[in-house]
Length: 377
Image (spheres, one colour):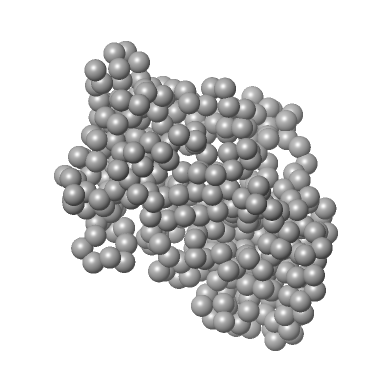
């Protein structure tokens, strides 16, 4: 028999929630434990999402053994582009017992239906601004920090439960080779033309990080409109989510683009893969965790291209080719051995396909986001 314990934000037993999240990965050396401080923030009643959304946490237990967990979130601001569709989300799903997993999903769906949701997306930790998607291919490749990572049986479990794939994504890992160098010869000419016309391709100014982040927020809120699952968030929430990236930014790997008037029209955000050191921290950000990081951190061989934001005018001007040429030139100059174009949505790969001439099939990781129709319940 499975019992379901339900908790409001601020009431979730930290150790119980954390232990269910760790259990599926005890013997998995590739898994990167989340930081305890991040878990506490996610469980908190002061989370910025709660200014406009509602959440509930569910833990399924068989006897005294916790076997599954999930968080349900509902935000009336979530935009779907479908008239009459109201979306809730299920996130932070983990399980070690199948019956408990089904029961927590059932209970979470019932809660979302009472809140007014007609469709549920998952896994999604509140919205696309937080972690989402299941990895469905490429389990042999170690994840970078922040990449979706899960046991291979989770997608099938969702499908058997009744979820259907609604969106696919991929990460392509490649070793810069002759194909990329030939591509560079073409796109560097376009970069030069843009610079001659007064467009500036700059490094992110780390000394003015907060000011730069405000400009990036405005750019992203504008350029991402119409993307699947997009919901606008204010700067305070954006800052809470992304200000921590400052610790991982390497000079020259985040490129901003400005037009002749001095307005930011593009950004390309990439970072070195520091997963070995972060994995060694074991979820601790105290002095011992930082010591483990320094002891285990290796010179990064891989660059992770995380996201790009470009105005529609920048797209028409050919800025994608220019900013891509600028980044890949720096990657080659610094001697990185691999580059990953990360988490690209199906149908939006054109930005990077020009650079993937050296990609191999075994170096592709794929992910899926699932949908559940509550109208049929």
